[in-house]
Amino acid sequence: MKVIAEYAALEMKKQRLSPFVGPVCAGLHFYYSIPESWPRKKAGLIKHKTSRPDYDNLGKLVCDALNGIAYEDDSQIVQCTIWKSYDAVPRTAISILELDT
Image (tube, rainbow, N blue to C red; front, side, top):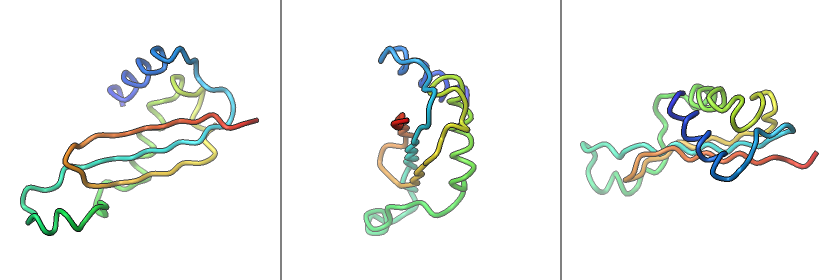
């Protein structure tokens, strides 16, 4: 949570944004390393991670970490999409959009 909060704070500062106050939409994409034990054919066919951690646990972790940084409180999130995929480069991509009020 701390690392997510630090990166988010840096990005908000860089874009000269303050925490959103209205309803927001969140997009969270978690990219996981392709297991080394997988044969190349399998690694090319399977795109989505269907094993743990559960999407709701990932979403809660990120949304709680962004409290007071991207928005005042995660109760402002009215829509959230979460993806779990395999990729050569593991990372987490987060987008928060303020909705029209």
